[in-house]
Length: 228
Image (tube, rainbow, N blue to C red; front, side, top):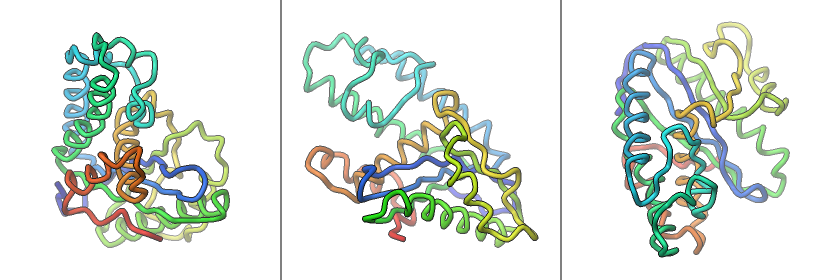
């Protein structure tokens, strides 16, 4: 739910798409006074997964939506289920459960932008720059400042440099683009689930058709996924 005030904000961002003709970025916006509460909700969700005997995913294990959708990864193999179809269904439902946890976080908002392209390598940093411009506008209109944290190790120079497209004077995004590995930060794993579910909503491919409605159903008042 959105609390409209001028509190400083954290933006957790992860990318999505198919790596070829569809690129997207999802951002999870959290007002800093609500960061502790949002983190506790995510941790509660993780402890619930760890206690779920259908999957037995340790609370410390990183969650990657692509692996969950395909029921692969060493921690997912801890499941006691011998029924492959049931195991895959339970694994995929982790994404939906995560989305529902995100939807209960106070002081948060989600947004996804995407672009269909024949120049993936060019349009990916360009779309990211557009998202940063949107964030800068949001912060300016709210009269506040924000931090941007992106999944990665900092080696993607084009993403790091995207902020330079914005004017330095009066910039509301502080500290530059900060990279952090999602394995170490649960809120980036949450952003990954947003990105993945939004991609399924846009792509609507047979392999993920059962997940195509999850984004819209969980975040009915959200603007997006928005084509750019």
